[in-house]
Length: 140
Image (cartoon, rainbow, N blue to C red; front, side, top):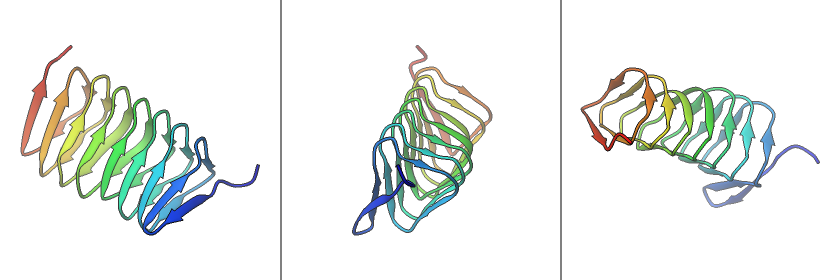
């Protein structure tokens, strides 16, 4: 099997399920990484990032908006400019954005810094949480 490739439809780029990118990846639009995709370097997405369940990014992530799938791992910091949602059981080294950050149950995250809201659903493990307001819904 050769190097992983992206299919393009307008400004949307889609990887194949289980694709592995062996270095840095830069995408000029929106990016969908289905389940079990891995980027072993830094990931730069000019638009929205959808990182599927059990995916991995080995370095830093830059995107406008992001949806981090359940049990995905981002080993570097995530920097965004919009809304970031981190699904159940995912791990992110840290998050910095200007929009809302949603953290689901079981998330492990370093420091979270935003000019917007931080919404926490259930129990998480985190570093410092800095936002306009932090709301916690349930702690089970």
